[in-house]
Length: 444
Image 1 (cartoon, rainbow, N blue to C red):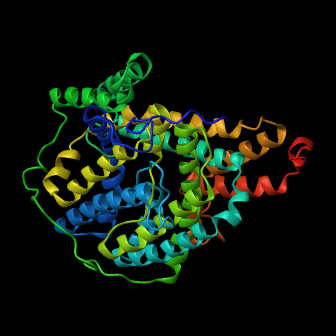
Image 2: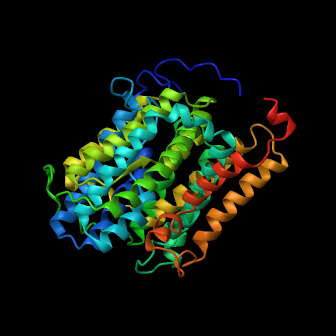
Image 3: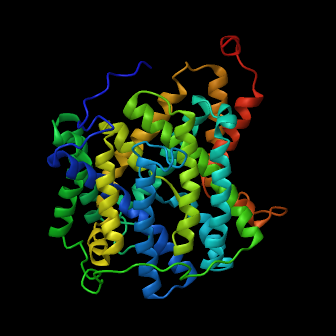
């Protein structure tokens, strides 16, 4: 695809410069609200599994916000050009690792999770260093298939949020769906009929509309805001670190797969916002930063980090790539990480609002993957690679216990049976290498 003419510095469509506050603030806040549930929810789930006290639970959430802010800033501005992609992405605590983290936490404890995270971070750094040599394993067909599956795998998450959040009181009730659908209608209407900041910030305005409706319906709970403190900083090794070989191996495998997801997210960002594929240096720096942030974050209680597909989806929707917009979002998250009361306000957003706003984003991610898959045409071979990889990945995860029968170790289901992305990525890579190329492809 031919690159578009670069926008002027200071434009929201340019990497450099600082846009006007009227554009910078709402567009930055849009990324904050899109990421906030993904940032804090893994910490809550791990806290429950590991039986943490109330104070430690709060601390784990605060560290999640801080790690996300720092990881995003490193991605934006890089360290010595080798750590960080230099691309407009949000990176932070990720849902992608949750099934493995809960399995480790249930069998061992939080220090074992953090030790395994350090091992996984080392693996991610090595993957990033040698990404140039192995990038040929991830052509647009493979990467697009992974992105396509990422979008598909996020649909149930969005729907669960729209219904009110699994296990919540009133799950699937009329109030939740009313709020979610109003949010979605406002987002879609502004994306298609709005202009200027209304169009660019459609997701934020939709969430504000949904939040106000939820407030009128008595669905917003402020009980956590009052008791929250004004300042809190985590100390190194507060939770401790323990190394268990089986846990380290299990999480390391997931880190490799999430490095592939990072390739997909960075590719989606550049394809959707810049009409190009990322360079080897951008991919390498992005994955190395992912590993480094995980290692350092683990020392403070931070959970594993990855790029946020929902925020990548926002870029593909509005094509806003200005680094200052993302830096502002990171600074808001940093403030939330240092001021618990501020973070508590952000967590009052009902899950129905989040679901209504993000389902359109997830749909865009899916279509971005499809666009990459078909960028070089769509042949019978492509159909086999995509169809079989997605069928295996999605099919296995849809059948509970399909990898828990006789002869399978417990870790097999934890690694391969909990996320369609893992199996899809492995199958797509293998099929792309094994299936004979068609005459046009072989001549390239």
